[in-house]
Image 1 (cartoon, rainbow, N blue to C red):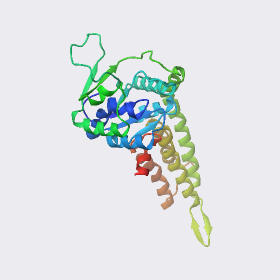
Image 2: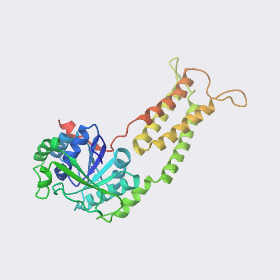
Image 3: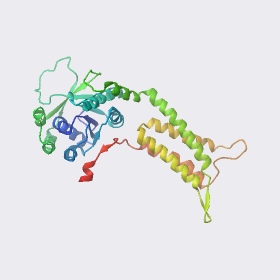
Image 4: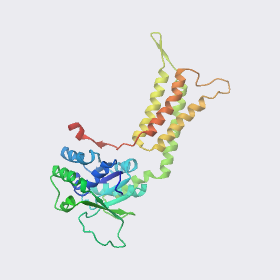
Length: 319
């Protein structure tokens, strides 16, 4: 983690502890053009969302299981910061899943340390750490903390400190976890082999959709003397829904790209003359639309920035 704009994911049991020990860093990341996403195991109240909005704009995700943490780590995280020693089983499982996902994906992982510890010599065998200067963000942090009821006895010193400290985690540790097997099995879905297998399946699906659309796009029906290109309309809707749906559900651009290659490739293949001299894509406005739409949709979907899954933005609705 560095003192620069970043995409940071903070994993804490609740908003109060997150703001107390890492609120300044959350605010600084946002002020420098980055994004700060808070993950908790339980939903936040309206007051907690309002306090979080004061620092980060309210970017919050409720992790109902380790898979939600993996989704956020894959799509949003450049740095993951977790709170150690979480007590509840749900929060412990989420914290463990975040650590496993970060290390598996090669994302820098940090744990919160004692921000109020005095400066001094650091042992040679201590893990790399960062002390983030949050002097300019301290007032905003304390204001947000006041909305949450103030710091607890355990976080009072950290809440008022001008710096916040985070310790780099270089390898997996045997921290507490209510469901370590489940977290590990979920993170395995991100392996290269599984991604390539999913991409191959998406390629086949793209070929099928493209072939059916190519055959059907010239179909039309006459209503009151007007020809309605029903085949073109349904084919375009099907392909656009396929690509956009994959992007929203899977979040993996490799899979979406493979599907797009399948659609565009089969459409391009069918533009070639067949052995009898005819083509499945004749000249005409309908064929032009069908040829261009998959490529345009694929470019738009692949350029679409990643969004946090199931992010809570209730504070905007109640504002």
